[in-house]
Length: 96
Image (cartoon, rainbow, N blue to C red; front, top):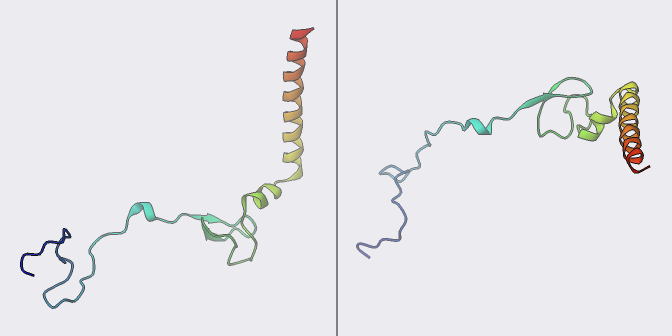
């Protein structure tokens, strides 16, 4: 078929011998993988890592929250309780 046009561009990515040429595109900066530190051992791990390859500890948001010192959780609970108490006391007083 002479003059057949399938709507696709020519194979400009291969040379005359039909061999593939390596692309000359650079790495996309958006594809950069961030590294974080393991909450248990402090080793550098990739952001998407689920388990630390150094210490074997599981890296999850819940595990990081559970590792917070007890005094931070107690102070946070007291602050939330006081805020809710003041909020509800103010609402109750407006109706009485």
